[in-house]
Image 1 (spheres, helix red, strand yellow):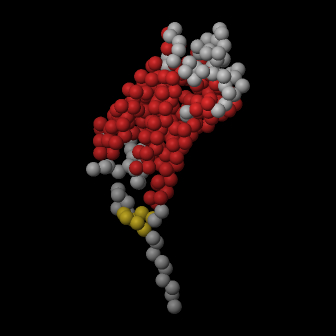
Image 2: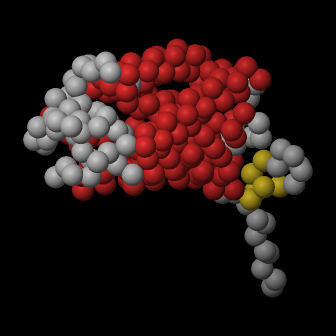
Image 3: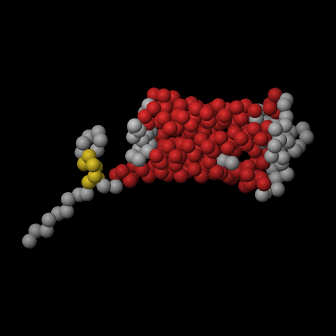
Length: 243
């Protein structure tokens, strides 16, 4: 007696071709966004490693020191804080790259590419650290050319990613409305904090540490908003249109 061959398990037809889609395909497509969301969620925490300074005796005043001073080339805690910064940068790079691969073409792709660039420039920021700690060492310059350049590129990539998703929300409000609504206030707040932290570059010292730490918290919020957006999209990085 011939045994009947079981029919392959399928789910709904593919939305473009109409062909049956194998069971598990949707789950596979969700792996990338879920992994990217997880990496961004962790990066939001580790990007604020300045909180460790309350536990690790760095000797730096949180109000008047840059976070990057703690992993300056001559600082004893550079391996710890530099390692955290580097791990965070790699997480963001991988997350942005992974999300960009599945994003719909347009401003969303620009946004995710900028997120990945943020991570890459952050790697360079750790690779070319400050030479010393200007808040603690007399005669130490506010920064060096390499670190200033990489930090500027990090900020450029960050604000480009925010602006790109704002533009995506305008061009496709059904898909990006929620992210756009929150980014509308986060972008100017983050930019204002970044500008206020640049006081020593124009001869205005004091309080730059507070402004920078507020900025770093805003970056964490941005990562978490992006992670939430990825998790809210059930089938692809670009997600379905919302009513």
